[in-house]
Image (tube, rainbow, N blue to C red; front, side):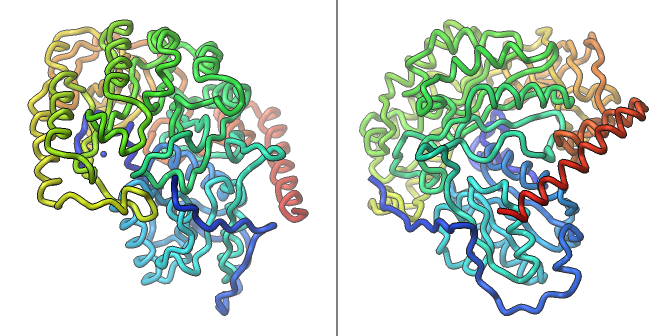
Length: 540
């Protein structure tokens, strides 16, 4: 699976460097619709599970989690998941509709796949929100709440059919969070579990197209999320990311709150493991700042929160329909910085929203100067088709670029980590740096800390002394190794695809322990699980 550009993954970066709606026509088939392409498939292509699939993902960590589930389901059924796009028989492209460049990337990938004679299945927000888009005409589509049926779509696509599955998961008339959290999964990083706690949101932002795809809020029950966490930690995961389009809105549709969930979840986090919270919009965290401060101070929760402001002008925020004022955003930041010392607050700004005046933009620059955010994501306004903002008169492109440049210049002059030189910190190692010479860890405040790439450090908690600080990173020397955790062999390299399957992952762990009887028992369970799954599908 390819790398994703998740705004919360790119700590301390800027711009593109490592950052009442018009109703749409919805297609809800009874089971699935097929459109024959009049192809003559080769004999091998109709034998299920004998082909290879390349998965590419754009966008947020929610999309990344969906791709991991789809890859797990396909692998369970026998398909080979490969990172080699050229050798793959089919490309599964999981799309993002937040920015124009992401959609352009999808279009280019489809063109490339067709030129290479590859089968294509499209998933994600572009195809869900605008299924009639010309460049995906005739292609198979997996809806954002239908990822548990990806095997059906892939099978039919190999047979030469065009299959499109949409619709919502519902309990009667009530929207659910989506497909089950207990599906098999292949994690992009075997040390990190991404749990989508809800889908959709409560806002109607005039510039955002994600609402077209993800829809209204749908939350998973607390018990399901906690159970997924328990299972993930048992499989060797060291870090859990809770994600959604707006984590702060979690539970408002099912009568619970985000703190209700977090108070239960922290009880099951093992020593040496951490929880990272995803993005929350200001209106929903204002109701329980005291609780959030307590949770973010917990030793096994990163003192990090992504709270997008988008603009500091109340006039612009009103035109964006953001449902808060700049003063309310500042109240969130001020309160958390007071109650959780050294907390990292990440935020976003949009430069060049259609109604933004020079005076409005000046207020945004003043906000950047005031708070000196360690992580600031600066974006130019992109008009997304079908949104109210796309119908507004645009600011000239040269002015938008100039505003983006001004904001970037202020941010680049700020060095948030200088005061941390010489500090002794505890970090958790979960990644390999892009230079392949360092491991990447994060301290309590989710600052990126680089240490020498020494065998045995991956997945471990280390004590380091900070010897160098940069704009976007810290470098440390290891002065004490924590208690060494037993990392399964498949987890030794987080850049290598590894299975995380309910029974199947257990098989791998048992085999390493040479527990033959347990291995045979779980193997039988795994086979039965797959047979039941096939029977279930055949009777749908």
